[in-house]
Amino acid sequence: MLRFLAQRLLAIIPVLLVVAVVVFLILRLTPGDPAAVIAGNNSTTEDIARIREQLGLSKPLLLQFGLWLGSLLQGDLGYSYYLSKPVTSLIAQRIEPTLSLAVGTMLLAVLLAVPLGTLAAWRMGGWVDRLLSLFSVAGFSVPVFVTAYVLIYVFAIRLQWLPVQGYQTLLGSGSRGVAAWASHLALPWITLAMIYVALIARVTRASVSEALTEDYIRTARAKGLREGAVLLRHALANAAVPIATVIGIGVALLIGGVVVTETVYAIPGLGSLTVDAVLNRDFPVIQGVVLMFSLAYVLINLLVDLSYLWLDPRIRY
Image (tube, rainbow, N blue to C red; front, side):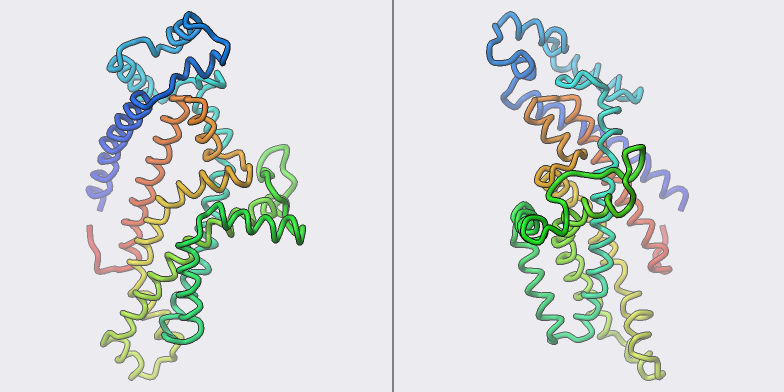
């Protein structure tokens, strides 16, 4: 177990190195000059050349990567070209809204999807199963931003139950309590959770329905166990590994959904920071955020793998 954990942790290093190389090259090879963005429309060629020299963009590409990698190994993600602030401090300022959005979305999705998928498998062909199929098609088909604007129009503009946009911090001096924090995130949570409810519920339905056909289910029923105990303690417990897997896969989709959702709802998180950095060609910010997202995704997948030991005692590493 410890050997497996050590191997997986060491494997993170080459993964992040590959991500760093790919992101660095893509940013440098795509059209657009950060110096021109900073200089403005009325700048001269000399002004742009001077800013490129200040930013270190006039150096050879390999030397730029070596300097950035050396700083990265020391825990320094560099300085923002556009904001002139350390990238680490910018990420630290924006991480709370993104974590609140991502964690709340996944909790909401799991709490809704697993019971719905289990109930649909138990009453396959019934009205819950049909509604789940319809909802899954809608959840996968409708883009995130369309769902967001519909929810804003109904619940924020017409009914005026929830705020239209913005974010209320949960921690710090500006906090107005859990209610204000949750009210600003309710619509973003619902917007993102619709996709993951559809995904996780479908996998739960398929896994539980397959488990219900196994011999141990018939044995449990023959022993006189209640249907609820058969469903939860036997069918759902044995279908937990595929469900945990799809939850881990959903994290990768969540990263893209966070960017769109934060932009629509004007949430000052890492998603909106990334969008602003892309528009301003702010290379250090883009590189830092992508690396952080990659590290989070790798660690979450490691946690999912470790959860298999608890979900299925037959699995050994």
